Image (cartoon, rainbow, N blue to C red; front, side, top):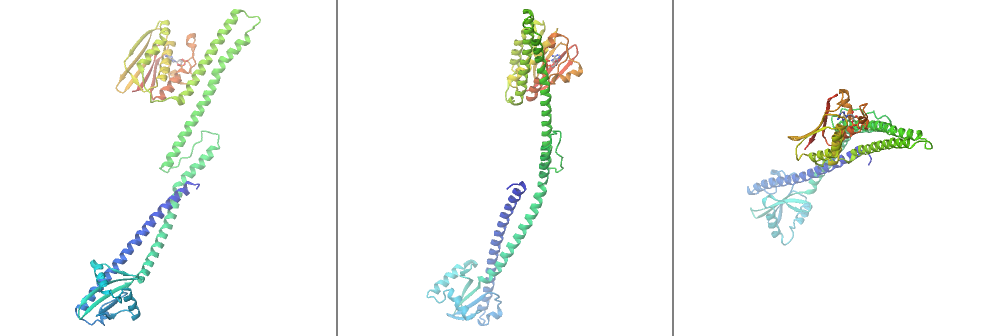
Length: 456
Ligand code: ADP
């Protein structure tokens, strides 16, 4: 079994086969019951006519002139002698034998038959179905009226054959219609498969599946597949961009280290020159370590994050502030804290710490005088955190770019020159993972405000 079409068709054929078989069985059963009812109706109607005939004391010999017997046989026995028979004498003998007429205990059996046929029942003896009656009219009259089942079996056989032929016809017709419908329904799948196979062999990731208007799951499948292709294309582009940026960023400190080593004339250099070179090399290797640490963090963000965890924002803020207190004091900045208690947010503590650390260290780095304000408040279902500073601020065109990887505003001041341009891109990525909205407002030369809106 290889194709979906074949599987569907086989299930369909199996289904209709079972249904039609049940219909055939029900039809045969129904016809059989109907046949028996008809026989019973016919026999009792004729018996009623015979009864009238006998009770009116008419001649028994000519009973068949007044009563239409059709396919029925009629034997009338008067005082143990056959007074009338619609059959040949041989057949009459045969029938009477089957009815045990010649047995000694026939009279008992006859009364049993009469009891048996109470409520218009029928008596069966081999191939015969019959009814009996008894009259006390000019002696003892016993009536045997019946039909040979074989006669009816023939007509039933005809009905059964008709049913089977009819069912076979319906079955074939349904198979053809089913095959046609299944082929038509499955057709888009074939087209999709062909297109996917063609796309597979093309290196161009910008190719998309052609949309088919089927207004069903196939159309949705194509749309989803195209969306997935778009995501893959974006991811690949991102990875390419990231590798090119990363190699560029890694190359800069490595070039500086290499330059320092090449310039150093170990034979003739003074201790001061040696120390200065080592300090530079150490600073660059620290930069390398920082870059690698951030790369690892970025790659871990893709898989490690679980948004089921919660943490307390107020507790995290205090820890981060405590850690950076010396840096704030050393720059003589005023620290304003306006933080509510018990601010539980749907955010993993480890990543919340990274976000807060980045925002606060940036605020310290890019503020030379004035204040840093941290505000965290709960408003209905949302907890808002604002990290505001009176620092250098950002120009309008820089605001959107600060979340791009490796983006840095070019500053002349040496303490602001330090940085990789990765911090805010990591913050953004983490916030996206925890469905936390992030907004920046800034005025060049006046200060910036980074606002986060957490789910509770
Ligand atoms: P960096 O390591 O350079 O600080 P970030 O990704 O953290 O990298 O920041 C990207 C850029 O955004 C920085 O170079 C800086 O120009 C700007 N920036 C970030 N925070 C602030 C702030 N609080 N005030 C002004 N500019 C900021």
